[in-house]
Image (tube, rainbow, N blue to C red; front, side, top):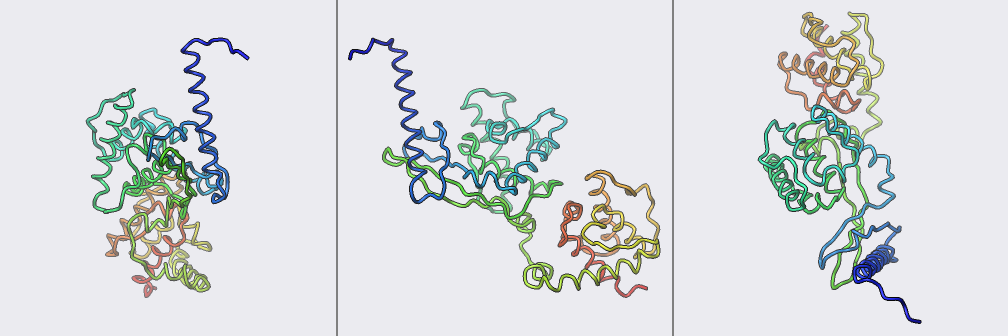
Length: 346
């Protein structure tokens, strides 16, 4: 059978289409090998690799994990809150951050600095140059922590979501973002490498978040870590003692606490309690008596922390944001510090 002749351009396009199809099939075969627990969809661009180049694909099961979804949502909301004045709205991390434009604006806003980069870059070279400048600035900020960086210019520009998440988590922790990141978020990642013309795959687990204390660099453990990890049965005893202590003083204002997890989260009781313990009246214009936003609650807790410092207490280990976000361990640490100093007051 004789096939009709095609124009050279059409023939080239058809050959390219077949090549992409073959490579896509090759990638799927590598990932669907017997060693892999579940098939992972590989897009053509993930299969067209250079020799020794690698791509990573998040396992679909991990993408569907509620904690992973929460982490992504929290970070997107945080970026949009920071950049609200820039009228920048991020909807998808991989597509909106890979070229460095949003990352530049985010870092400039967080660090209150101005980076020497072109405002708009369309070419790949220009985008990578911008990313290089941004990531060098990030590295300079994070250097004191001496942690290995888990992202590169190529991984960010290649829309590697795992690398982008590592970067954003590091920035959020460094700048003490007023957000609560879900703890212990890990994802299964398929790493596809091309060696000697063949694609090879392997599965690795990427840990995106640990505990808030670990991510903030506070590696020292205290009695509450031990209590939560090894003696949860004694937790109710500690809570009962602290409730008795705070009610002994708050009852003077006809206030009563029954739930430590929630009733101190808006900072109001903390402020009033400090006034009672130090025997002074706290002017109502210094805090929000009925806070109705996250920022107002953080303000109240931060103000209570200032009153604690004025009273001779050490700076609380907890962050105000942790207390507002109903982190019980953080709330217990704050109240226990008050208990140790003021437990003998009548």
